[in-house]
Picture 1 (tube, one colour):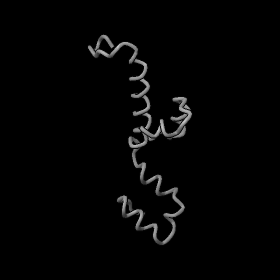
Picture 2 (cartoon, rainbow, N blue to C red):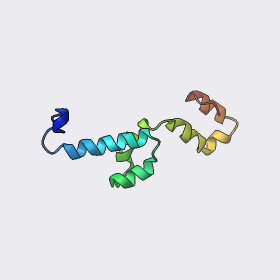
Picture 3 (cartoon, one colour):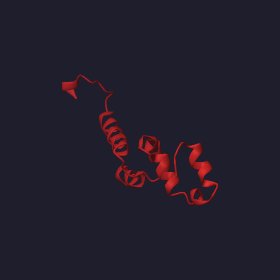
Length: 84
């Protein structure tokens, strides 16, 4: 960190590195449940703060949504901008 001239409050380096790892993990297509285990979060809600960084996270959610296979599922897909 000295080479970059980045100054962090005392004790924050570990947190910043964890957060950076989690963000890049999700941006690279990592699985949110795997990330939960890696970070040791007991509650998925804590890990979900990184979910928005996942590419195509809405498309994946729609693909696995059983309601999306119903005739009205096309409306759900259109609402989130996904072509089924």
